[in-house]
Image 1 (tube, rainbow, N blue to C red):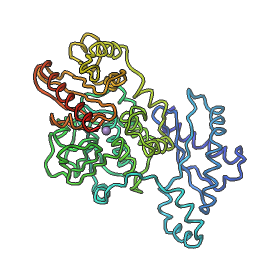
Image 2: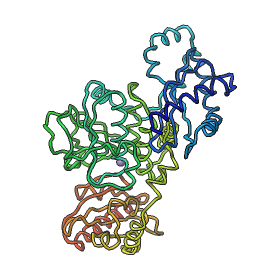
Image 3: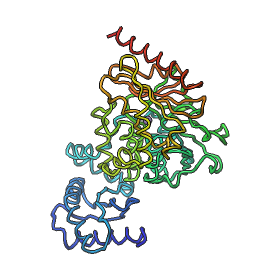
Image 4: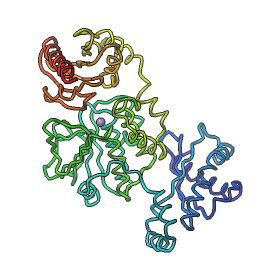
Length: 455
Ligand SMILES: [Mn+2]
C-alpha cells in the first residue's frame, strides 16, 4: 500500500470508529484532518480539530489519548499490517490559527479558567532564543543548514530537525550533510534528502551553523558561499576566545545539546511545529550528547526536553537502539583493538588510547562509528582523564578528551586550539604520534596538578 493511501485509509478508519465504536463521552465534535505516518510506519500522528470551547477541546484530547489503544486494535483488525502504528493525537493548530480572533474573544469571556487552559497548551521553551534570531527565521525565505565536519548526531539531528520544521512551514531549505558520518544517521527522517556540499544549488539568504560556530568547522560546506548570506549560529559549545562568526548568534552552554536549543526555537515560533519527525531528529542528538542521559550535562531540564520530544512522537527505545547500542561486528573488532591500546599513565589516573587507520583497515571498522569508544576509558577505576588519539594522517591526530569530576578538559583542549565542554572536549595536533602523546600527557598532568592544588 502506498504511504499516502495508507494514511488516508487510517484516517477513514479512525474517523469512522470515533462515530460508531468509541463510546467515550468526552470525545465530541472531533474532526480527523490528517494522518501522518513515521517513515518506519511504527507511529502515526493524528491531526484533529474540535469544534467547541476550550473545555470541550481539552476533554476531547483526554478522550482521544485514552482511546488510542482501542483504536490501534481496531486498525489491527481492519488492516493486515506488519506493525500497527502507535497513535499520537495532535491538535491541528494550523486551522486553529485562523480562528485565533475567535479564541481571543472567547478568552475575554471565559475569564481565569480560560487562562489556565491556555497555559496548559503552552509550549515548553526552557532556552528562549534571542529575538533577533527568531526574526531571521521569520523574515527570510531560503536557508542553508549545516554542521561541523566529522558530524555527530547532535549536529546532524539539529540540522535535520530544524530543516524539516522550516520546510513544513513553507521555507526553502537546503540541508547540508558531510561525506562521512555514523551509519545510524540513515534512520533519521530527512537524512536521505540532505545534500553533500557539491550538490548545493543556487544561493541562500541565510546560512545556519548548528552545533558549531566557526566557518572553518564546516569544511567543504563553506565552499560556494557568496559572502552575502546572513550567518546564524546555534551552538552550545564555548570556546576560550568566545569568537563566533555568526552575524546573529545564539550560544547556550547550559543546554546539554544543540538539539535542546532547536527544540526551544521550534517551541518559540508558533509557525513551526514539533512533528514526530522533527522530534525524532532532535531526540537522537540529545541522547548522543548526553550518552543516554548519563553525562553530567543531564539535568532536570534535559530530561524534560527529552520527555517533550517523546511526547511529540520520538521513539525513545528505537532511537537509543540505533544511536547508543547497535554496532556492527567490524566496529566491535575495532573496539577490541582500541581497548587493547589503553595505556595507563601518571599512576593510573590518565589513559592514553589510540585508534589508527591501520586498525580500521585490519578490522573493517569505520572511524565514524566509534562514538562512545572513549567513554570506556573513563569507566576504568582510578582514571580521571582520558585522551583518545585518532589518526587522520601520519602527522595529524584528532584527540578526544574526557574528564571525570572535578577535572576540566575544555581548558586542556583550548591550549591546543580546540574546544568543547568541561567533561568532553577535542582538539587536533600535528606531529608524529609519540610526540603528540607526550604533549597531551604533559597538558593532562598540568590539569591533574591544577585541580589538586585548587582542591
Ligand atoms: Mn553537541
